[in-house]
Length: 352
Image (cartoon, rainbow, N blue to C red; front, side, top):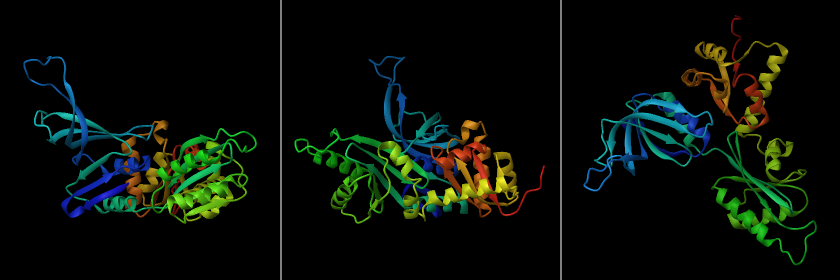
């Protein structure tokens, strides 16, 4: 999340959504009665001589909504906000009407609150700070998988085919292949990112040297002992021992440790663990949650969205930590198997 302006004294925060994790944060930030200002489109019926009464023109407007409902789509890629129109850049739009906006990565908005509490301020400042992000490349002479890892969210961007044969021929140069891969990596790269290049043979070293020049960055690391490429290579790379050593202070590795500890406590009969929303909510209300992990496909289990959001906010309000797990990764699948949400507890709950 890119926070461009945050002034809690004046009740205003302007930001741009970068990822699905940001949508989760916004779902926890936006409450009924807040005012959301963003660009949207709306059908406007023009009252002129030649206009058809059953037709309208869809126009782009800046609109302010007094929030009535917020809903996070089960795909975790859209946040729908519905409310009453309070301000608009087009005077022909009825300010007494209602409107819905759909927020997704890339969307910019301003959120106004009458009062920014400690939790809301912490959420904005923690997500607005730049966490370590990785651009991943799993490559050999035939293909290259390119992805990004932000927090615990892994995104496979694309796979580039080289078109080269089994052996490098003099007639068919590998330079266009290298240039295309380097170009895609450069588009994904942001200042402060770490680029990780892995794969069999020496191709990875050649590409790593090219990327140092292209990106004008020394944050390019070559991992040895990893032989997979393409999109499968990207998914396997984050689980490799070499990468986890490199990223030992990352959110991903921290969350894997949390999930491993959950599994250990469950299997050993340690009662300082809770899973499924009703039990985690009970622990949160009691102030017993030390760390909570929720899967990004948790809504597929049919749980109540408002109850989940209240539970996560209660955890952090009582000095626990909340983490979002990518359900496409192994530890995310484990969380899903526990009902989509698990918690490590400071002390055991009373049994039912």
